[in-house]
Each structure stands twice: as structure tokens, then as C-alpha cells.
Length: 110
Image (cartoon, rainbow, N blue to C red; front, side, top):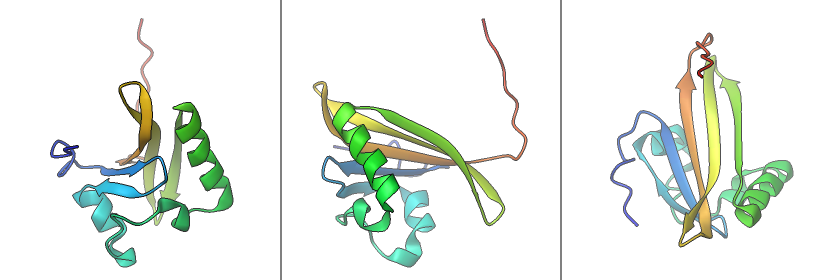
């Protein structure tokens, strides 16, 4: 699988397989987690609490999604996690983490 489209995006992209093994991290994700070393090939369950592990397992089993916002060190982020599929079979999960402003426009479209 090629991830060239995501390599230099201005958001962190991390992809894992159905066992939680990290297959890809783009440049921003690598920079975000640099203090943990090279995480590609490592299992993401090792760095998540039990509640987060359960949510990830649920997404991997159901093909579902999860989204939320966080704030850390004064930086707000939107986290979007979703199962990825190949031939309609869940192959793993992708997480996209993007910095967002404190105040953000919200539009209702018809």
C-alpha cells in the first residue's frame, strides 16, 4: 500500500493493521511522537489505556469511526479515527489528527 499522498500533509496520519501494528506514520505524526522513537512496526495498543484500546478494538471489529477534540499544551486538535477497508474487509485503522483554532466557524448547509 502506498501512502505518498499523506507523507507531507499538514496533519498527523497514522495507519495500523487489524492487530494494532503501525504500518505508516506521515512526517507530522513522526514528529509528534518523536520522543517515543520509530513507532512503525510497533503495536499501538502498547501506548493506549484500556478504554482507548477497547474503542480501537470496537472500530476494528465493526468498521466504525470515532472523532473527538483534545487540547494539549494550548494546542487544540480534532482527532478522526476510522477503519480502513480493502475489498469491503476491515484491514486496520487510520487516525488523522489536525490542529484546529480555538474558535471555528460552523456552517449548516442545505
